Image (tube, rainbow, N blue to C red):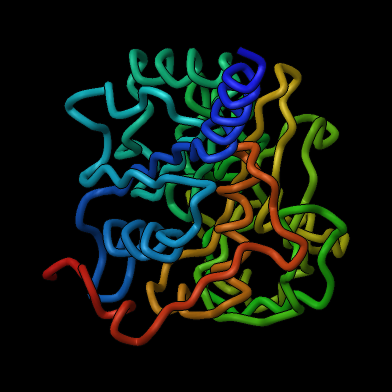
Length: 287
């Protein structure tokens, strides 16, 4: 009897240890030109990068919001990589409520590139609750430029990431929670003045971002949030160009963020992955 009890305890512990955390990636519909906004290919690529990581199980949903929401059952994290603004797949009231319920259960919420932009108002408030920040029209801007990250914080999402530079459509001057409450910036830089060469517009420039630039304020291009309810979130403004997923540091930051918001221990060297040119060329949308 004693041996049987010990065996049951051992098998139960083994089963619990082996259970992977489920991460759901919402990939947006076809968008932009070839090699840009490759939401489906990007999500499939990141899922492929994690195939040999037993700690997690990645499910990719194509074309935005799923017809059957049972796909979210058991999810530890949900990440949106899709067109934003009025086309954002989660901004309908019933979907905001659905994700709010998931977040209240401790599910991590993330958003990447255009997926960080939602309309001001209730969608914006929801993003602040879930991730700590979002792109707000006439406040934030979306220039294309080379960002140089010379230092990173002591945070699990930055583990194993070395200083790097990369050319992307890096959004900045996000709308954050007051005083960055609960927010930890991960990628921060002072953008070059050339990023403000365009005239004012909903995405190109505004008096607020110009004033911030005049004050030489650092801008946060990736951030994480620890929510009061114990849940976690992140925002990442890069990801316009599909080829950038081939950069190890760029990719590792996002994979680390997946782990972190799903409450999976991030390895000391970060989440390791290998991506080949053939992998980058796979699953691209026909445009």
